Length: 320
Image 1 (spheres, rainbow, N blue to C red):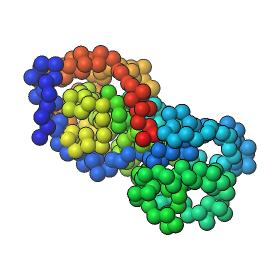
Image 2: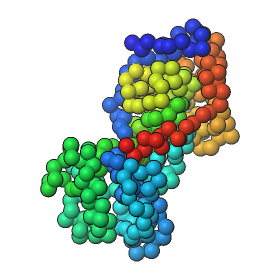
Image 3: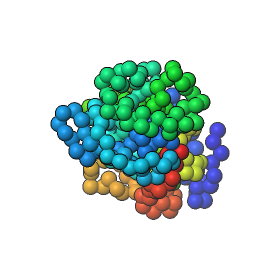
């Protein structure tokens, strides 16, 4: 049972939020994004030139990097560079990648691609990784979880088959406000997310819209704000209920449709409160009193006034 702090002094709002409590079935489908172990400057890139022969010239991103690695131009196999979502790229209803990740991991084995395969198929990338071997082997997570000689020295962390799921719902794990977006990664190469983001894997795009709709409702966002400070991590799903999407349920389809409308760039996408969405989501938690809905919305507006995101917070932890 969550012990709720006061919500701007309105018992009716507090009572409404208490109805959201409970473990969500999505708790076991939520994961952090790809973790480089403090070696972002080795794996994160901007693409400068596509040579049209399967290779590109790229520059590694060193901004905010934990390890001091020189920013240089390097030629790499294009096949290994995946669009990367960072915390700064995810906002309520919108997620647009702004960088590329050198993805050299086998999601099935949860280890780096074997070095023999790298040498045969991706010699340019292997040369770059060898150039930074000392930094990669000195990562504390590598020393703790992997065996030298058995696991590739460029192994990445928090990577599984879920990392490449086609449909995901994403939000920043360090933020002063919950902002959720749908990640449609059905095209190739798949959009990947970094470790500053938390994601739920979904079976379909429709399910993704539904989950984002529920989590972006004023009820859910205010509940998160009142029981967590700055870290809306995976555990929020263990305490705040989001039902499993049921395509046969009319209410679920209505929430999906409204979330899809907002995700598609509706004129009111940046409104701090979405009345139609709140009215629908209130029915999920059996909040039927109109005055309770209004009280929750007013409490949220008093707390935030208008959407407030702080990408600076996630940047501070981006390469931990």
